[in-house]
Every structure is written in structure tokens, then in C-alpha cells.
Image 1 (cartoon, rainbow, N blue to C red):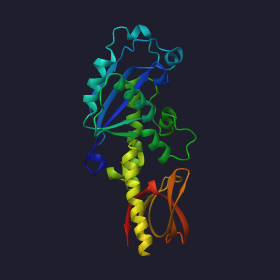
Image 2: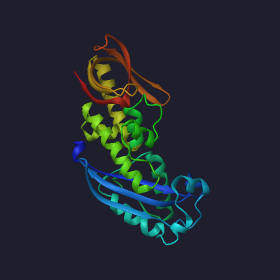
Image 3: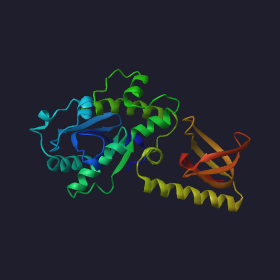
Image 4: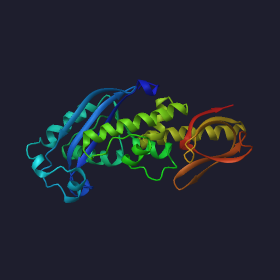
Length: 273
């Protein structure tokens, strides 16, 4: 995977569904995706999907996809293998990726298909929440309107991908302004890859503990989740604590001149000095 974000190929995607819960039998009825690299658009994927069940009235009220529209659409066993082939080389992104991936994983399970083993999934909603912590709401349409994006969210897969791309571009520009250009840092902040993120945090904890044992200082590059700011700090580490399933570094911050607490998952770079 390239180290610079601008060299990474992202695949922005969205789904529409018969309802909200695949565990209750809800299915995908539309998938769309557009490839994106350094703000340049590439290939597009789009298909309606016959779910072989009725669309719920609540879902129809949102996406206006009717049972009649889906009668001639291909079934998921034809669409999903094509979609999985389309996404296999990029970084998969969507707005509220946990929701979309729950449906993708469910459809793959029903068909005994495996997602690409190396697949990285990024949640653009997580980007919005972390980079815009003071915003009242983080719904896609609300974030877009507050970024002066005039495109209307229509709750159709392809048009919502188009809107998400615009939001994604502005969020990436914010990251660049904060000095976050390395994909590894981007991934640690926004991916759904909990196993890898846990491994990265464990590595940081080992380095912090080593500095404590050596009575050494740490130079860290830190992303503040509360302020969405990136700063470089010199810290004398004191201890590592856990609170509500999050690990924190407690230490004396030479920048602030006082003891401070830093979230481990907000430490983008760490060096013992």
C-alpha cells in the first residue's frame, strides 16, 4: 500500500436496502461505487438488485425504490461477485461504513463468498466526527450543507456516492492542512480494521512502557479527538491507564507545562528521545 494518501486508490461506495437489519432478513437492493485517486475519478460500478422479498414501506419512503423497479434487476448472486472483483485493489470507503459492510458481509455469507483478505475499509462518517467535533449533527446531508456543498442527498446509491466524494475531498483537504498525509496515520484514525488498529496501539504501548522503564522522554505527533488538532509534543511518560475500553498515556507535557492525558489511538507517531 502506498505511504502517501494521494497515491492510494479509494473506492467510495453506498448501498440501499429493504430495511435496516440484515439479521431480520433485510437485503441489498442497490449498490454503487466510484474509484478515486488523488481527487481524480476512475471507474464506476452501479446495479439495482432484486432482493427476492418486498421493500419495506419505511425504506421506500427514504429511497423511493419500488418492488416494481426491482422485478427485472439481477439477483445478488450475479451482482456481488462483480462488486467484489471491482473493489479488490482499492481501499473501500463509505459514509457509515459499519452499516454498509454489515449488509455486504451478510450477502457474502449467504452466498459462501469471501471478501478480499487484504481489504481495508474506511468510515467517512468517522472522519467527519473526528475532524468536525463541534458540529451539531454528522448526517451526510448536514455535513455537506455545512461545507457549502449544494448537492441534495437523494438516498439513491450512485447519487449518494457522488455526494460522499465531495465531502471526502473536503475532509482530506482538512487532513492535509493538519499535516496528516501518511496513509498509515489515516488508516489508524478512520479504518474499521480493528485487529490492525489494536496491533498498532499495542506497539505504541510497548514503546511507551519502554520509555517509562528507561526514564526517557517521548516525542509524539498527536491528534486531539476533542479539538481535531494535530500537535507535536515532548512528553515525560508516567503511566498507561484504561478508561471505558480506551487506553491513555499520562505524562508531563513540556508544551503545556503540566500533566496531561493522551489517547493512545490519537498518537500518530512516537519516538523515544
